[in-house]
Image 1 (cartoon, rainbow, N blue to C red):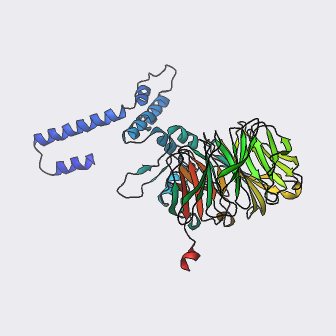
Image 2 (cartoon, rainbow, N blue to C red):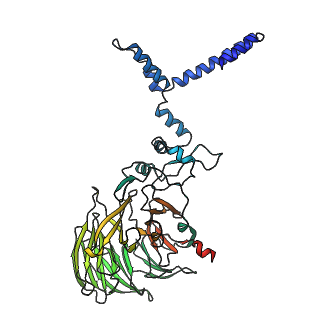
Image 3 (spheres, one colour):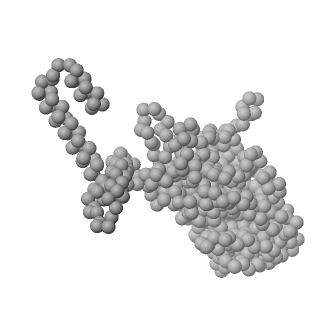
Length: 506
Protein backbone atom coordinates (compact mmCIF):
# COMPACT_ATOMS: atom_id res chain seq x y z
CA UNK A 1 0.00 0.00 0.00
CA UNK A 2 2.87 2.38 0.80
CA UNK A 3 4.57 1.65 -2.55
CA UNK A 4 1.42 2.36 -4.55
CA UNK A 5 0.95 5.65 -2.76
CA UNK A 6 4.52 6.81 -3.47
CA UNK A 7 4.20 5.88 -7.16
CA UNK A 8 1.06 7.92 -7.52
CA UNK A 9 2.78 10.92 -6.00
CA UNK A 10 5.79 10.68 -8.33
CA UNK A 11 3.58 10.53 -11.47
CA UNK A 12 1.69 13.69 -10.59
CA UNK A 13 2.81 17.12 -9.47
CA UNK A 14 4.95 17.31 -6.34
CA UNK A 15 2.96 17.72 -3.13
CA UNK A 16 3.66 20.61 -0.76
CA UNK A 17 6.21 20.12 2.00
CA UNK A 18 3.50 20.49 4.61
CA UNK A 19 1.64 17.38 3.40
CA UNK A 20 4.88 15.44 3.21
CA UNK A 21 5.72 16.49 6.75
CA UNK A 22 2.23 15.50 7.91
CA UNK A 23 2.57 12.10 6.21
CA UNK A 24 5.94 11.49 7.82
CA UNK A 25 4.49 12.47 11.16
CA UNK A 26 1.65 9.96 10.75
CA UNK A 27 4.09 7.23 9.70
CA UNK A 28 6.27 7.92 12.70
CA UNK A 29 3.22 7.84 14.94
CA UNK A 30 2.06 4.52 13.50
CA UNK A 31 5.57 3.09 13.84
CA UNK A 32 5.68 4.19 17.45
CA UNK A 33 2.33 2.51 18.02
CA UNK A 34 3.55 -0.71 16.39
CA UNK A 35 6.73 -0.62 18.43
CA UNK A 36 4.72 -0.06 21.57
CA UNK A 37 2.45 -3.01 20.72
CA UNK A 38 5.38 -5.25 19.87
CA UNK A 39 7.16 -4.44 23.10
CA UNK A 40 4.02 -4.43 25.26
CA UNK A 41 4.46 -8.14 25.89
CA UNK A 42 6.96 -8.41 28.77
CA UNK A 43 7.84 -11.99 27.87
CA UNK A 44 8.61 -11.04 24.26
CA UNK A 45 10.58 -7.98 25.38
CA UNK A 46 12.83 -10.08 27.62
CA UNK A 47 13.43 -12.72 24.93
CA UNK A 48 14.41 -10.19 22.27
CA UNK A 49 16.96 -8.51 24.55
CA UNK A 50 18.46 -11.80 25.68
CA UNK A 51 22.20 -11.73 24.76
CA UNK A 52 23.55 -14.38 22.42
CA UNK A 53 26.00 -16.87 23.85
CA UNK A 54 29.50 -17.31 22.43
CA UNK A 55 28.85 -20.84 21.24
CA UNK A 56 25.38 -20.04 19.91
CA UNK A 57 24.50 -20.38 16.25
CA UNK A 58 23.77 -16.91 14.75
CA UNK A 59 21.25 -18.36 12.29
CA UNK A 60 19.42 -20.20 15.05
CA UNK A 61 19.33 -17.05 17.17
CA UNK A 62 18.00 -15.03 14.25
CA UNK A 63 15.27 -17.55 13.42
CA UNK A 64 14.31 -17.80 17.10
CA UNK A 65 13.97 -14.04 17.43
CA UNK A 66 11.97 -13.91 14.20
CA UNK A 67 9.54 -16.49 15.52
CA UNK A 68 9.32 -14.74 18.86
CA UNK A 69 8.46 -11.46 17.16
CA UNK A 70 5.52 -13.16 15.42
CA UNK A 71 4.17 -15.15 18.36
CA UNK A 72 0.88 -14.36 20.04
CA UNK A 73 0.64 -12.02 22.98
CA UNK A 74 1.16 -13.37 26.45
CA UNK A 75 -1.81 -14.90 28.25
CA UNK A 76 -1.56 -12.23 30.93
CA UNK A 77 -2.38 -9.47 28.47
CA UNK A 78 -5.13 -11.49 26.82
CA UNK A 79 -6.76 -12.18 30.18
CA UNK A 80 -6.42 -8.48 30.99
CA UNK A 81 -8.28 -7.57 27.80
CA UNK A 82 -11.05 -10.06 28.48
CA UNK A 83 -11.38 -8.87 32.05
CA UNK A 84 -11.74 -5.31 30.82
CA UNK A 85 -14.59 -6.45 28.59
CA UNK A 86 -16.48 -7.78 31.58
CA UNK A 87 -15.49 -11.42 31.15
CA UNK A 88 -14.18 -13.70 33.86
CA UNK A 89 -11.00 -15.69 34.04
CA UNK A 90 -12.91 -18.96 34.42
CA UNK A 91 -14.84 -18.35 31.21
CA UNK A 92 -11.60 -17.36 29.45
CA UNK A 93 -9.98 -20.56 30.63
CA UNK A 94 -12.88 -22.64 29.35
CA UNK A 95 -12.76 -20.78 26.05
CA UNK A 96 -9.09 -21.46 25.36
CA UNK A 97 -9.51 -25.13 26.33
CA UNK A 98 -12.43 -25.67 23.91
CA UNK A 99 -12.33 -28.54 21.37
CA UNK A 100 -10.88 -27.87 17.93
CA UNK A 101 -14.21 -28.10 16.11
CA UNK A 102 -16.01 -26.01 18.72
CA UNK A 103 -16.35 -22.84 16.63
CA UNK A 104 -17.48 -24.74 13.54
CA UNK A 105 -20.22 -26.58 15.45
CA UNK A 106 -21.35 -23.55 17.41
CA UNK A 107 -21.81 -21.38 14.30
CA UNK A 108 -24.42 -23.69 12.82
CA UNK A 109 -26.31 -24.46 16.01
CA UNK A 110 -28.40 -22.28 18.32
CA UNK A 111 -27.31 -21.04 21.68
CA UNK A 112 -27.87 -23.08 24.81
CA UNK A 113 -28.35 -21.94 28.36
CA UNK A 114 -26.17 -22.97 31.24
CA UNK A 115 -26.40 -26.45 32.72
CA UNK A 116 -24.24 -28.26 35.25
CA UNK A 117 -22.60 -30.06 32.35
CA UNK A 118 -21.61 -26.94 30.41
CA UNK A 119 -21.52 -24.12 32.96
CA UNK A 120 -19.03 -21.45 32.01
CA UNK A 121 -18.93 -22.50 28.34
CA UNK A 122 -19.03 -19.96 25.49
CA UNK A 123 -21.66 -19.82 22.79
CA UNK A 124 -22.40 -17.44 19.88
CA UNK A 125 -24.66 -14.51 20.63
CA UNK A 126 -28.27 -15.08 19.52
CA UNK A 127 -28.55 -11.53 18.19
CA UNK A 128 -26.42 -10.11 15.35
CA UNK A 129 -25.96 -6.83 17.21
CA UNK A 130 -24.56 -8.55 20.30
CA UNK A 131 -20.97 -9.17 21.09
CA UNK A 132 -19.06 -11.96 19.39
CA UNK A 133 -19.16 -14.16 22.44
CA UNK A 134 -21.82 -14.28 25.13
CA UNK A 135 -20.97 -15.69 28.51
CA UNK A 136 -23.25 -18.25 30.04
CA UNK A 137 -24.19 -17.58 33.64
CA UNK A 138 -22.33 -19.66 36.19
CA UNK A 139 -22.95 -20.19 39.86
CA UNK A 140 -19.43 -19.64 41.12
CA UNK A 141 -15.88 -19.80 39.92
CA UNK A 142 -15.14 -22.84 42.04
CA UNK A 143 -18.05 -24.78 40.58
CA UNK A 144 -17.12 -23.70 37.06
CA UNK A 145 -13.60 -25.00 37.56
CA UNK A 146 -15.08 -28.30 38.66
CA UNK A 147 -17.36 -28.42 35.64
CA UNK A 148 -14.49 -27.54 33.32
CA UNK A 149 -12.37 -30.33 34.76
CA UNK A 150 -13.10 -33.69 33.13
CA UNK A 151 -12.38 -35.45 36.41
CA UNK A 152 -15.55 -34.03 37.88
CA UNK A 153 -17.73 -34.62 34.82
CA UNK A 154 -16.67 -38.17 34.01
CA UNK A 155 -19.40 -40.63 33.19
CA UNK A 156 -19.51 -44.18 31.99
CA UNK A 157 -22.30 -45.21 29.64
CA UNK A 158 -22.62 -48.90 28.82
CA UNK A 159 -18.91 -49.53 29.13
CA UNK A 160 -17.80 -46.29 27.46
CA UNK A 161 -15.96 -43.56 29.28
CA UNK A 162 -16.58 -39.98 28.15
CA UNK A 163 -16.77 -36.48 29.57
CA UNK A 164 -20.09 -34.75 30.05
CA UNK A 165 -18.60 -31.32 29.36
CA UNK A 166 -16.95 -32.01 26.02
CA UNK A 167 -19.58 -30.33 23.88
CA UNK A 168 -22.88 -28.62 24.67
CA UNK A 169 -26.04 -30.21 23.39
CA UNK A 170 -27.50 -27.95 20.67
CA UNK A 171 -31.06 -29.07 20.28
CA UNK A 172 -34.45 -27.85 21.31
CA UNK A 173 -36.36 -29.07 24.32
CA UNK A 174 -38.33 -32.20 23.53
CA UNK A 175 -42.10 -31.86 23.57
CA UNK A 176 -42.52 -34.28 26.45
CA UNK A 177 -40.33 -32.10 28.66
CA UNK A 178 -42.31 -28.91 28.15
CA UNK A 179 -43.97 -27.40 31.20
CA UNK A 180 -46.65 -24.73 31.02
CA UNK A 181 -45.52 -23.21 34.30
CA UNK A 182 -46.23 -23.41 38.01
CA UNK A 183 -49.47 -25.05 39.05
CA UNK A 184 -49.24 -23.86 42.67
CA UNK A 185 -46.76 -22.77 45.34
CA UNK A 186 -46.74 -23.59 49.06
CA UNK A 187 -44.66 -21.13 51.07
CA UNK A 188 -46.00 -21.38 54.60
CA UNK A 189 -43.10 -23.54 55.81
CA UNK A 190 -40.41 -21.60 57.70
CA UNK A 191 -37.63 -24.18 57.38
CA UNK A 192 -36.00 -26.16 54.59
CA UNK A 193 -38.19 -28.87 53.07
CA UNK A 194 -36.01 -31.98 53.06
CA UNK A 195 -38.38 -34.58 51.58
CA UNK A 196 -41.69 -34.57 49.69
CA UNK A 197 -43.89 -37.25 48.11
CA UNK A 198 -47.23 -37.71 46.44
CA UNK A 199 -49.71 -40.17 47.86
CA UNK A 200 -49.75 -43.78 46.77
CA UNK A 201 -51.50 -44.03 43.37
CA UNK A 202 -52.64 -40.42 43.89
CA UNK A 203 -52.40 -37.41 41.61
CA UNK A 204 -53.42 -34.62 43.99
CA UNK A 205 -52.32 -35.67 47.51
CA UNK A 206 -48.92 -34.22 48.40
CA UNK A 207 -46.98 -34.24 51.68
CA UNK A 208 -43.62 -32.78 52.64
CA UNK A 209 -41.43 -32.82 55.71
CA UNK A 210 -39.21 -29.99 56.94
CA UNK A 211 -36.14 -29.50 59.08
CA UNK A 212 -38.23 -27.94 61.87
CA UNK A 213 -39.98 -31.27 62.48
CA UNK A 214 -43.29 -30.42 60.79
CA UNK A 215 -45.06 -32.65 58.27
CA UNK A 216 -47.57 -30.95 55.95
CA UNK A 217 -50.26 -32.68 53.89
CA UNK A 218 -51.67 -30.74 50.93
CA UNK A 219 -54.10 -31.08 48.07
CA UNK A 220 -52.89 -29.95 44.64
CA UNK A 221 -56.22 -30.21 42.86
CA UNK A 222 -57.83 -27.30 41.02
CA UNK A 223 -58.02 -25.42 44.33
CA UNK A 224 -54.70 -26.16 46.09
CA UNK A 225 -54.87 -26.08 49.88
CA UNK A 226 -53.20 -27.37 53.02
CA UNK A 227 -55.15 -30.28 54.50
CA UNK A 228 -53.26 -30.92 57.74
CA UNK A 229 -50.05 -29.85 59.42
CA UNK A 230 -48.67 -32.61 61.62
CA UNK A 231 -46.57 -31.42 64.55
CA UNK A 232 -44.72 -33.77 66.87
CA UNK A 233 -41.11 -34.26 65.81
CA UNK A 234 -38.57 -32.08 67.58
CA UNK A 235 -35.91 -32.33 64.84
CA UNK A 236 -35.61 -32.79 61.08
CA UNK A 237 -38.04 -35.07 59.31
CA UNK A 238 -35.73 -37.34 57.33
CA UNK A 239 -38.29 -39.47 55.47
CA UNK A 240 -41.92 -40.58 55.42
CA UNK A 241 -44.18 -42.95 53.52
CA UNK A 242 -47.89 -43.38 52.80
CA UNK A 243 -49.86 -46.54 53.33
CA UNK A 244 -51.43 -48.08 50.24
CA UNK A 245 -54.83 -46.49 51.03
CA UNK A 246 -53.29 -43.07 51.90
CA UNK A 247 -54.98 -43.03 55.30
CA UNK A 248 -51.78 -43.08 57.35
CA UNK A 249 -48.29 -41.65 57.17
CA UNK A 250 -45.23 -43.02 58.94
CA UNK A 251 -42.38 -40.55 59.43
CA UNK A 252 -38.80 -40.83 60.65
CA UNK A 253 -36.76 -38.08 62.24
CA UNK A 254 -33.40 -37.12 63.69
CA UNK A 255 -35.08 -37.00 67.11
CA UNK A 256 -34.72 -40.84 67.20
CA UNK A 257 -38.46 -41.48 66.86
CA UNK A 258 -40.82 -42.96 64.29
CA UNK A 259 -44.34 -41.54 64.31
CA UNK A 260 -47.49 -42.88 62.70
CA UNK A 261 -50.11 -40.29 61.73
CA UNK A 262 -53.78 -40.53 60.83
CA UNK A 263 -54.22 -37.99 58.05
CA UNK A 264 -57.97 -37.42 58.34
CA UNK A 265 -57.77 -36.48 62.04
CA UNK A 266 -54.29 -34.97 61.91
CA UNK A 267 -53.14 -36.78 65.05
CA UNK A 268 -50.22 -39.04 65.94
CA UNK A 269 -51.52 -42.48 66.84
CA UNK A 270 -48.19 -44.16 67.65
CA UNK A 271 -44.63 -43.18 68.61
CA UNK A 272 -41.75 -45.66 68.33
CA UNK A 273 -38.62 -44.63 70.20
CA UNK A 274 -35.15 -45.63 69.04
CA UNK A 275 -31.59 -45.27 70.24
CA UNK A 276 -30.26 -43.38 67.18
CA UNK A 277 -31.46 -41.08 64.41
CA UNK A 278 -34.06 -42.65 62.15
CA UNK A 279 -33.01 -41.88 58.56
CA UNK A 280 -35.36 -43.67 56.13
CA UNK A 281 -38.67 -45.50 56.26
CA UNK A 282 -40.87 -47.63 53.97
CA UNK A 283 -44.12 -49.57 54.21
CA UNK A 284 -44.18 -53.05 52.75
CA UNK A 285 -45.96 -52.73 49.36
CA UNK A 286 -48.05 -55.90 49.88
CA UNK A 287 -48.32 -56.24 53.66
CA UNK A 288 -48.70 -52.73 55.09
CA UNK A 289 -48.44 -54.14 58.59
CA UNK A 290 -44.65 -54.28 58.10
CA UNK A 291 -42.74 -51.02 58.46
CA UNK A 292 -39.00 -51.01 57.63
CA UNK A 293 -36.85 -48.27 59.17
CA UNK A 294 -33.15 -47.57 58.58
CA UNK A 295 -31.21 -45.74 61.25
CA UNK A 296 -27.82 -44.29 62.13
CA UNK A 297 -27.01 -47.39 64.22
CA UNK A 298 -26.16 -49.33 61.01
CA UNK A 299 -29.32 -51.40 61.03
CA UNK A 300 -32.77 -51.84 59.53
CA UNK A 301 -35.61 -52.63 61.92
CA UNK A 302 -38.88 -54.16 60.77
CA UNK A 303 -41.75 -53.00 62.98
CA UNK A 304 -45.26 -54.29 63.34
CA UNK A 305 -47.45 -51.37 62.31
CA UNK A 306 -50.28 -52.40 64.62
CA UNK A 307 -48.26 -53.00 67.78
CA UNK A 308 -45.07 -50.99 67.20
CA UNK A 309 -42.87 -53.93 68.18
CA UNK A 310 -39.69 -54.97 66.38
CA UNK A 311 -40.17 -58.09 64.27
CA UNK A 312 -36.71 -58.45 62.79
CA UNK A 313 -33.41 -56.61 62.60
CA UNK A 314 -30.52 -56.66 60.08
CA UNK A 315 -27.05 -55.14 60.60
CA UNK A 316 -25.10 -53.32 57.88
CA UNK A 317 -21.64 -51.82 57.45
CA UNK A 318 -22.66 -48.18 57.90
CA UNK A 319 -25.62 -45.90 58.51
CA UNK A 320 -28.62 -46.81 56.36
CA UNK A 321 -29.55 -43.55 54.64
CA UNK A 322 -32.05 -44.53 51.93
CA UNK A 323 -34.21 -47.49 50.89
CA UNK A 324 -36.96 -48.69 48.58
CA UNK A 325 -38.99 -51.88 48.01
CA UNK A 326 -39.53 -53.71 44.75
CA UNK A 327 -43.08 -54.15 43.46
CA UNK A 328 -43.41 -57.70 44.86
CA UNK A 329 -42.19 -56.91 48.35
CA UNK A 330 -39.66 -59.73 48.29
CA UNK A 331 -36.68 -57.39 47.90
CA UNK A 332 -35.56 -54.34 49.81
CA UNK A 333 -32.84 -52.11 48.33
CA UNK A 334 -30.95 -49.77 50.63
CA UNK A 335 -27.92 -47.50 50.56
CA UNK A 336 -25.57 -46.55 53.38
CA UNK A 337 -23.33 -43.64 54.30
CA UNK A 338 -20.32 -45.19 52.50
CA UNK A 339 -22.04 -45.35 49.10
CA UNK A 340 -22.77 -49.10 49.16
CA UNK A 341 -26.02 -50.51 47.75
CA UNK A 342 -27.54 -53.63 49.31
CA UNK A 343 -30.09 -56.12 48.02
CA UNK A 344 -31.99 -57.62 50.96
CA UNK A 345 -34.52 -60.45 50.79
CA UNK A 346 -37.64 -59.97 52.87
CA UNK A 347 -40.23 -62.55 53.78
CA UNK A 348 -43.67 -61.04 53.19
CA UNK A 349 -45.26 -63.28 55.83
CA UNK A 350 -42.76 -63.14 58.70
CA UNK A 351 -40.82 -59.94 57.93
CA UNK A 352 -37.45 -61.69 58.22
CA UNK A 353 -34.56 -59.91 56.45
CA UNK A 354 -31.55 -61.60 54.86
CA UNK A 355 -28.80 -59.82 52.96
CA UNK A 356 -28.10 -61.27 49.50
CA UNK A 357 -25.86 -58.87 47.53
CA UNK A 358 -23.81 -55.74 48.02
CA UNK A 359 -22.59 -53.32 45.39
CA UNK A 360 -19.57 -51.29 46.48
CA UNK A 361 -18.61 -48.17 44.57
CA UNK A 362 -15.11 -48.04 43.09
CA UNK A 363 -14.72 -44.38 43.98
CA UNK A 364 -12.06 -43.52 46.52
CA UNK A 365 -14.22 -40.87 48.15
CA UNK A 366 -17.14 -42.49 49.93
CA UNK A 367 -20.36 -40.50 49.99
CA UNK A 368 -23.78 -41.14 51.50
CA UNK A 369 -26.58 -42.44 49.28
CA UNK A 370 -29.42 -39.90 49.16
CA UNK A 371 -31.77 -41.67 46.73
CA UNK A 372 -32.68 -45.31 46.13
CA UNK A 373 -35.60 -45.75 43.76
CA UNK A 374 -36.85 -48.96 42.19
CA UNK A 375 -38.76 -49.25 38.94
CA UNK A 376 -40.45 -52.42 37.76
CA UNK A 377 -39.63 -52.03 34.07
CA UNK A 378 -37.33 -50.07 31.82
CA UNK A 379 -37.35 -50.23 28.04
CA UNK A 380 -33.62 -49.69 28.04
CA UNK A 381 -32.77 -52.55 30.41
CA UNK A 382 -35.71 -54.75 29.34
CA UNK A 383 -36.54 -55.39 32.97
CA UNK A 384 -36.53 -53.88 36.47
CA UNK A 385 -34.03 -51.13 37.24
CA UNK A 386 -32.73 -49.21 40.23
CA UNK A 387 -31.68 -45.55 40.46
CA UNK A 388 -29.26 -44.34 43.12
CA UNK A 389 -27.83 -40.92 43.85
CA UNK A 390 -25.03 -40.04 46.25
CA UNK A 391 -24.28 -36.75 47.92
CA UNK A 392 -21.14 -36.24 45.82
CA UNK A 393 -23.31 -36.07 42.68
CA UNK A 394 -22.98 -39.60 41.32
CA UNK A 395 -26.12 -40.88 39.57
CA UNK A 396 -26.08 -44.65 38.94
CA UNK A 397 -28.49 -46.76 36.89
CA UNK A 398 -28.64 -50.50 37.65
CA UNK A 399 -30.44 -53.42 36.10
CA UNK A 400 -31.95 -55.78 38.69
CA UNK A 401 -31.88 -59.57 38.32
CA UNK A 402 -34.89 -60.73 40.32
CA UNK A 403 -34.09 -64.37 39.65
CA UNK A 404 -30.70 -63.94 41.38
CA UNK A 405 -32.13 -62.35 44.52
CA UNK A 406 -31.80 -58.78 43.30
CA UNK A 407 -28.29 -58.87 41.86
CA UNK A 408 -27.35 -55.39 40.59
CA UNK A 409 -25.50 -54.67 37.34
CA UNK A 410 -24.33 -51.13 36.67
CA UNK A 411 -25.59 -50.06 33.26
CA UNK A 412 -24.59 -46.39 33.18
CA UNK A 413 -23.72 -43.52 35.49
CA UNK A 414 -23.52 -39.75 35.42
CA UNK A 415 -21.18 -37.60 37.50
CA UNK A 416 -22.62 -34.24 38.53
CA UNK A 417 -21.15 -31.51 40.66
CA UNK A 418 -20.71 -32.46 44.34
CA UNK A 419 -23.53 -31.38 46.64
CA UNK A 420 -23.48 -29.86 50.08
CA UNK A 421 -27.10 -30.68 50.89
CA UNK A 422 -28.99 -33.95 50.67
CA UNK A 423 -30.38 -33.54 47.17
CA UNK A 424 -32.63 -36.23 45.71
CA UNK A 425 -33.29 -37.56 42.21
CA UNK A 426 -36.14 -39.47 40.61
CA UNK A 427 -37.11 -41.38 37.51
CA UNK A 428 -39.24 -39.57 34.98
CA UNK A 429 -42.02 -42.19 34.88
CA UNK A 430 -43.76 -41.14 31.69
CA UNK A 431 -40.73 -40.12 29.67
CA UNK A 432 -38.55 -43.07 30.61
CA UNK A 433 -40.54 -45.30 28.27
CA UNK A 434 -39.99 -43.20 25.14
CA UNK A 435 -36.46 -42.79 23.80
CA UNK A 436 -34.03 -43.06 26.67
CA UNK A 437 -33.69 -43.26 30.43
CA UNK A 438 -34.65 -39.88 31.84
CA UNK A 439 -33.89 -38.62 35.33
CA UNK A 440 -34.95 -35.46 37.12
CA UNK A 441 -32.86 -34.08 39.99
CA UNK A 442 -32.46 -30.98 42.09
CA UNK A 443 -29.27 -28.96 42.26
CA UNK A 444 -27.33 -26.49 44.35
CA UNK A 445 -27.87 -23.71 41.79
CA UNK A 446 -31.65 -23.60 42.51
CA UNK A 447 -32.69 -25.27 39.23
CA UNK A 448 -34.46 -28.55 38.43
CA UNK A 449 -32.59 -30.52 35.75
CA UNK A 450 -33.68 -33.31 33.41
CA UNK A 451 -31.05 -35.79 32.28
CA UNK A 452 -30.96 -38.55 29.69
CA UNK A 453 -28.58 -41.20 30.96
CA UNK A 454 -28.33 -42.85 27.54
CA UNK A 455 -26.62 -39.83 25.98
CA UNK A 456 -22.83 -40.21 25.98
CA UNK A 457 -22.35 -36.43 26.15
CA UNK A 458 -24.32 -33.47 27.44
CA UNK A 459 -27.06 -35.43 29.10
CA UNK A 460 -29.00 -32.39 30.36
CA UNK A 461 -32.05 -31.87 28.15
CA UNK A 462 -34.05 -29.29 30.08
CA UNK A 463 -34.21 -27.32 33.31
CA UNK A 464 -36.88 -25.55 35.34
CA UNK A 465 -36.13 -22.19 36.92
CA UNK A 466 -38.19 -20.79 39.76
CA UNK A 467 -36.45 -21.51 43.04
CA UNK A 468 -33.99 -19.15 44.65
CA UNK A 469 -32.26 -21.68 46.88
CA UNK A 470 -30.88 -25.22 46.47
CA UNK A 471 -33.55 -27.66 45.30
CA UNK A 472 -33.53 -30.69 47.61
CA UNK A 473 -36.70 -32.74 47.00
CA UNK A 474 -38.26 -34.04 43.77
CA UNK A 475 -41.47 -36.06 43.26
CA UNK A 476 -43.88 -36.97 40.42
CA UNK A 477 -47.58 -37.59 40.95
CA UNK A 478 -49.31 -40.73 39.79
CA UNK A 479 -50.88 -39.03 36.77
CA UNK A 480 -47.41 -37.91 35.70
CA UNK A 481 -48.67 -34.43 34.84
CA UNK A 482 -47.37 -32.70 37.98
CA UNK A 483 -43.84 -32.43 39.30
CA UNK A 484 -43.19 -31.14 42.82
CA UNK A 485 -39.88 -29.65 43.97
CA UNK A 486 -38.79 -28.22 47.31
CA UNK A 487 -35.88 -26.01 48.27
CA UNK A 488 -33.70 -25.09 51.21
CA UNK A 489 -35.79 -22.01 52.04
CA UNK A 490 -39.04 -23.97 52.51
CA UNK A 491 -40.72 -23.24 49.17
CA UNK A 492 -42.60 -26.05 47.43
CA UNK A 493 -43.41 -25.54 43.74
CA UNK A 494 -45.74 -27.82 41.81
CA UNK A 495 -44.97 -27.68 38.08
CA UNK A 496 -47.59 -28.55 35.48
CA UNK A 497 -46.45 -30.48 32.43
CA UNK A 498 -47.68 -29.46 29.01
CA UNK A 499 -50.21 -31.75 27.41
CA UNK A 500 -49.06 -34.00 24.60
CA UNK A 501 -49.82 -33.21 20.97
CA UNK A 502 -52.43 -35.92 20.85
CA UNK A 503 -54.36 -34.40 23.74
CA UNK A 504 -54.12 -30.91 22.31
CA UNK A 505 -55.51 -32.04 18.96
CA UNK A 506 -58.48 -33.84 20.47
